[in-house]
Amino acid sequence: MDENKKFDVVGTNIAEKATVIWNVADMLRGPFKPHEYGLVILPMTVVKRFHDCLLPTHKAVLEQYEKVKNFAVIDGFLTKASGYLQIPAHLTTHSAKN
Image (cartoon, rainbow, N blue to C red; front, side):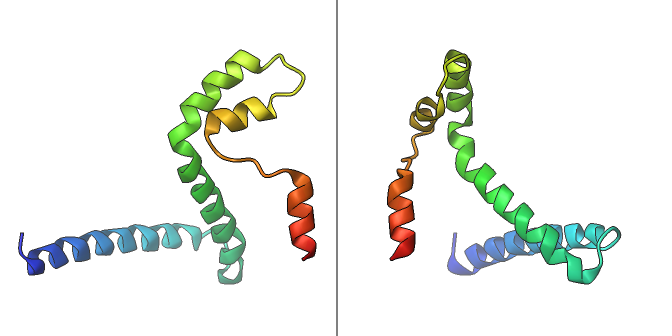
């Protein structure tokens, strides 16, 4: 594939995504006033980002949850199943002060 063809394909993909975003914005215009868009779009963007980041390990976490749901403390098991590192609270509190 030559460089011009690659550019056309990428440009088309971006245009399609932009169209989807504008269509969503058009749907939001009904229930929300323009100054309220940020109150909806920013939180939903964050939720979507969390969802996308956690999706690859979602099934493993659910399976682990089924195994440990009756334990008194399950956070460590689920964090380990997710594959993400949990930073101890005392470290985050200390670093926030500096």
